[in-house]
Structures are given as structure tokens and as C-alpha cells.
Image (spheres, rainbow, N blue to C red):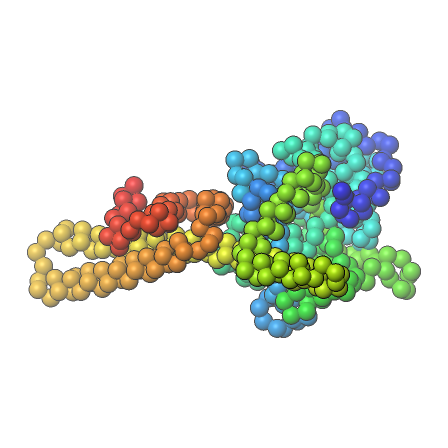
Length: 512
């Protein structure tokens, strides 16, 4: 089975490859391929010795064919609501992450496609230039899709292994809106509480250091001149607008409206007011210019590519998808057993009435979908509870550390006046109250999380939390995550967890 994206790319693959696109041409200088190299970059070859660099984007969810994760995109206020209002959507990725079965990943280009990279498929093998490091703009959507198709065909013909990632064959295409939104916001490299913010954290100079836009910029820049987002992606906002593979759709208060519109462009460009550019910015462009009767081309709109793959790469995966669907459907219908039993009895009584049977089947399927949605929500809530347990555990550590510091300082000071002693004792009493209150909050949340139906999936959910901490450079919280898991397992096994236990365990972590 092939997705519409793959069919679109295959249709474009009939375009002939440039005759002189050799794979053995001397390589470009690194500054024309990747001005800011990172150890986990993925590099694809281009004709004429060129290259294109991609960044991995990890997506939590699970190792099943049907697993995905819910994300929230858009802005919560209603300004420009028909266009940018907040909505929930679902994202999954095709490539496995070795050693992390709970994660999948896709790859998105680190930079916009440049003039140099676009020209590399022309067959002329003209050496790259500094001027050619600007984004390739002024191309139509069809030409961008064709470029992705031709480059896929060239790589497959000259270095097919470069597009086979962990055993899964990939291909190049434009990103879809949800992929772009997730990557632009920082994916797993930002905290869940920060993911919905209009901009990622920009500590080194603020937006003017990260976004190429406004009167101070004045013109299109070479790629990679600004600072990157948390995923190491450059120019996600400003410089050149970026075309999406999927078309523009309106927002019908929390979901996409059904009408398919024109071209969808994300990220804004250098003409924009920097204050107006956020990861929510969406613009519709007509695909054709009625004045010229030609496809729309704009000098401020370019594109970047994604490495994707088939949703079902084999008959085995097709069967796995069906098996997973059946298991999910069965689990969802089990959750509403009494209602399902009543429906089954009604179906028995209505064998001669096809219209009634059809209505009952629709009700049954709706109940199953509701059950699946409820299970997804339970898992998401449990994940949030685990995050909160880690945060509270760290708060306990900090208060406990403050108490220890006060006591050590008191001992080091030696003889104190009565007033000084009283003041220190008051500080200690206040901190102890804070410690006890925080610990009680931890225990209450622990009790609620241990009662969640999602506790049966605690292992995989906690593994995702660990991956998120590592992605954000918060490995120092691993001890708190392990403590939360240990406490949850204890309560699940009907063992007691006391405030004294929690504080003692935190003390051990703080002494490591």
C-alpha cells in the first residue's frame, strides 16, 4: 500500500536525471554543506560533490505500527483564530531509534535548500559560491516537489544506502504541517510546558539573534547566519518562507476545517515584523497566478526537505497493522463491556433489519473510538503525573539541601546570640514546613498516579520521560525519575510509601 505522498513523488520520478550528475566529483567545501556541524547530523550526497544535512527529530509513542503521540499546536487566544487557533493533532515517525523502542524519528533538513544545492541537479556541476548559499526561492510548489523526487532518484541510483535508515528505505519530500510545527517548537528538546509557547527559549540575544526578519535585515541572508532552535535547525522563522506538502486549511475552533485550500507556507520571511513571527504563523498562497496563468513563484518563499518513508513497507507490517488495530479495538470495546453486551443483544434481536444493524454497528464503532481516545488520554495524564513527580522530587531535594546548608552554617558559626539562634531556628522550621508540605503533595500525586489505568504501561511511559530529560540535558533528574518509578511500583504492589521513606530516598540521591 502506498500513501498519496509516495504516489505524488513516484509520479514526479519520471523526470530524467541530469546526464553529468556524477557521484565521484570532488567534494564541496564544508562551509557550503554544513556551516555548523553536529555529531548526530545525517548527511545525504548531492550531485557534483555536494551534500545536504538533516537533523533527527525524535517522536515518543511506542514501537507499534499504529502508535503515535498527541501534540498541541497553535495559539490559545482567538486573534487570527480562523488561522492559528490551538488544536490537537497526532504525530508519528517512520524510523526506529536504536536502543529506544519507545521512540521513532524523522529527519528534517537543517537548512533551507540553497541556490547551490538546487543547481547541483541541473547537470552543469558549477562550483558552489558564497552568493549561492542563500535559500532557493522563486520556485513553484510543483518544482519543489520535483526537486525532492529527482534528488531521491539520484541518491537511490548512486548511494542507496544513504537513504536506508536502520533498515528502513526512505525518500525525500516536503514536510507536512504537523512535522514542521513539532520540529520548529523544539520537539523533545523542550519541556512539555514550553512546547506550546509561541517561541522556543532564546537565551543568547533574544529573537533578533534567532530570526532573520525586519528592517535591520533588509534582504535574504545566506542560510545558517542566525542561531538555531533547540533541535539545531536554522532559519525556521524568518529569512525565507517554507512551503509544506499538505495544503492550507482553516481552523474550525480547535480542528482543521474540511475545505482544502491553496499552498501552505510556514515560518514567515525577512520582510515580516519579527514580533509577528512565531511557530504558529501560517499563510495561504494561491497555487496559480491568474495574471501570468503560471504556478505561483515568490522571491521570499523557498523550502526545506524531510526524509520520510512508507507507512507500510511490507506485507508483514500490513498484517502487524491489522493485528494492532484488532487488539486496540478489542481493548477499547472491553472498557465499555456492559454497553457492548447490550448492543450485542440488540443485534441478535435485529437480524432481519439491516437498517437497525447498520445503526447499531455505527454506535459500536463510536464507542470503540471513544474507548481508544479515553485510553490515550489516560496515558497522557499519567505521563504528566510522572513529570510532576519528578519536579516535586527535585523540590524536595532542594528544600532538604537548604535545611542541610543552614545546619552546617549554624555549626560552623560556633557561639551565637540568642537572637541569632532564634532566627536560624525559625528559618529551619519554615523550611521543614515547606519540606513536609512538598512531600505530602508528592505522596498525594503518587497515590493518584498509581490508581491510573495507564499504570500497566508505566515502563514505556517512564522510558519516554527519561528520553525527554536526556534530550533537554536534564540527566541530573534521572534519580528523581527512578524514585518515582520505584514508589509507583511499590503502591501498585500494595506496599506503603511514607513521607519518611520519600525524604530518606531523596537524601540518598542528594548525597550521590
